[in-house]
Length: 139
Image (cartoon, rainbow, N blue to C red; front, side, top):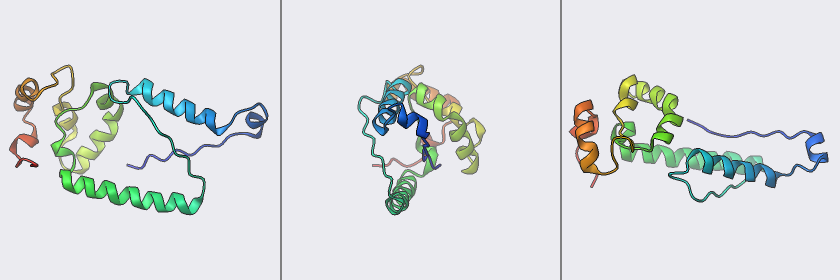
């Protein structure tokens, strides 16, 4: 799931004073507005050198692949903030289908409306038949 943001700014906008710093301020405000429960600070790095972009994409993909291998994919996700679950819902459903977890997998992920502790969410996970309950512990 690549999330690369391409931006084009018109010459007219530049002439009126729009600068990259304004775009960064918009990005930061958007992240804080969309995910207030999990984001309190944001750092934005703008890379304009094509070679650096290509190299950073390779590094990011390798890190994500390693992370996914270590976590055994989506099946270990048992909780996430409702706001994030709603935002990622369509992408999570598609990925769950690709991994053979079924389109209803996202509905098996607890959020703060269910609880925030293991004791609070365990009955929900058991009721939904979450796959993580059948897995060996990570530690």
